[in-house]
Image 1 (cartoon, rainbow, N blue to C red):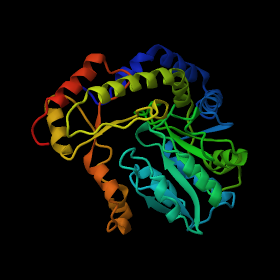
Image 2: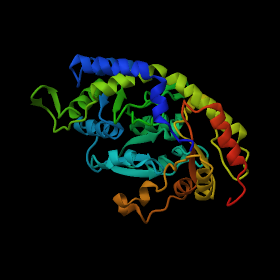
Image 3: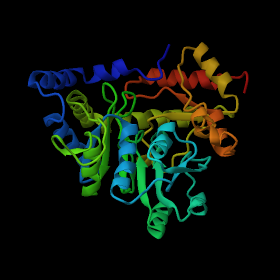
Length: 369
């Protein structure tokens, strides 16, 4: 079976450097809030193009702490609204509701799968305080129109950059385009740790300080607690591993783009839709997604032919039980995407013959579509 994502091979690619980094942490005797964190935060901020990066336990927490910080700073309060794409992964929305804020769901574009900027302004009310854009599948969701709307209505722009490490808009990295961004380093991400890990990037010094405090029990000074915080810290081993992988991120992304280009140019099945890419800098292909009306049948066929695929995501947020108050709502474009999406194998360790085989198997498919 060709794996959708072979994490073991990815680790083996940089095994020697990773072992050295982990051994360095083990030998140091310092496992939290040490030099590895300082080094990674500095290097990641420089890579993204922001003044600050603050490590935390995971990507969901990164987003939660951004909104929590804005509330501690008096910029937001319970009941305020945050505009967010309807077709995102649940974490984007959980971060909003966790803080007592109200998610306002907006349909995506069927061409890009990113939030449809033509539908945002009509949803802005006197309670709207922010727009949360999600660079879904690794594609930049930011547009100049979104930036203009934030200026016009004095809204914070928050980025969910969990899937888009290394992605760019007009030469600037995603994660530096808004007021703050949350990043996930879940093992399967383009920049993945050996467990859960995350970070917040921003140019706002006060926001960075508040995020660091609320993620450390609410403390800025040992045993002194300014906020009612939680424990959400990036440990030294994860920071060390991420430091190794960050050095190789751009070359890994280049491989992903090469694979994506081959898929797009060679998948010829008339009933399969491949991504539309207008700017290759603006997509890092964390996920290579195709769409077809007979998605489940195609997935079974590929499995039967030893090609592993994954659905991102089978149930949209507004149909989840945890948001049962939304279950009666209809977001037809979101639902279409979630019913038709299928993700093909994509990673920097896929071999040329693997990619060619995926294409060959798909192009030979005749039943069920």
